[in-house]
Image: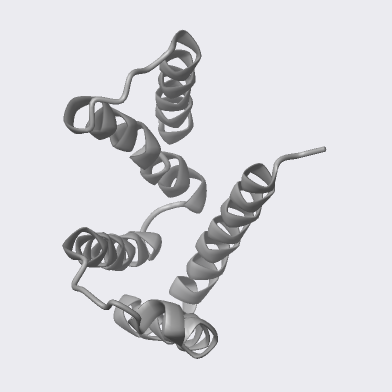
Amino acid sequence: MLERWFVLALLATTLFALGSFFGKIASDSDIPFRVYFFEGMGTITVLCMIILLKRNEIFSGFALNIPALLMGLSWGIGTVLFIIVLKDAKLSVIVPLTGLYPAITVILAFVFLGERLGVREVAGVSLAVVSAVLLAK
């Protein structure tokens, strides 16, 4: 039986893929900033649902979480740039290129968080970089 985290990771990956696919379709017929407006509306809808369902957990012992805020800003600005690029480039090139972000994250975790990489992790990141380069050429 598959572990819960693995199933959720596959679901998240599928949803990210669908988001990119729908983003390309939206960008083909609209301006990037309006596409981001509607993408943001979808995000706000999810946020409101979470607040309604988990408000007691969220607001109990509330404190500002700077890394989480920086995460949101990074994803938000990255998403705007991704949408702008969708207008002018092929999805089959953009996604592998932007898909390198996990490799960069692994390097940041190695350098700043002291995470150690095994042979399989190094091989996996290396193959991801190679595949993105091949697909983007």
